[in-house]
Amino acid sequence: MSEENFDLVIRGRRILTTAGIAAREVGVRGGRIAAIVPLGNGLSGEEIIELADDETLIPGLVDTHVHVNEPGRTEWEGFASATRAAAAGGVTTIIDMPLNSIPPTTTVEGLKLKREVAEDQAFVDVGFWGGAVPGNKAELRGLHDEGVFGFKCFLLHSGVDEFPHLEADEMEEDMAELKSFDSLMIVHAEDSHAIDHAPHPGGDQYATFLASARAAPRTRPSRK
Image (cartoon, rainbow, N blue to C red; front, side):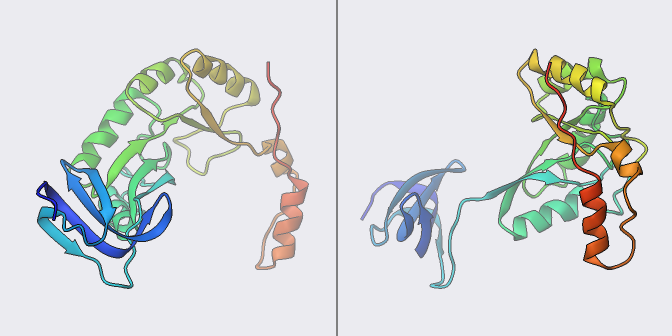
């Protein structure tokens, strides 16, 4: 028997470790895993959870592409429902995309507002992407310093007018700015001009969608 006491001990026959699924006891202290030992060691804890034989303990998942939409379009989905759903599915961290909310996360003030809105509603950890849009190059460093994980831009209409797309030369200018403080850019890299001339993927036939996608290849921007 271990004399060491933990805040929480989880015991089960199906616990995922670096060596695979095994019978283990997990000791948690101060919100962190402090011990993983073979089942039967008898770790002592303030709270004990005994897993059923058909339950598996796995590390929490991180979803890096989530559109929460709050504030401004909370009826689409807000932090309360998004983070409850994440927790129910084993996702312990979400990274929120910068568009769809009003205002979008394209300024430091917009980021602060998002954090304020999320603060009392989040059931899991929440992080944020920043947005790169025309005219906000001067905001990129500030957003980075405030902790965004990187930046998202579109090369065609994003679907919402509050988050306009960049032209290719604007994207390259912003990427040069991001390089100066070692951030990153993720890009919706469709060529808007090719999309405009592509067949419309109307109807419910996969073949028409496939034809439109083939006619509108994704761009591969040059590097300077």
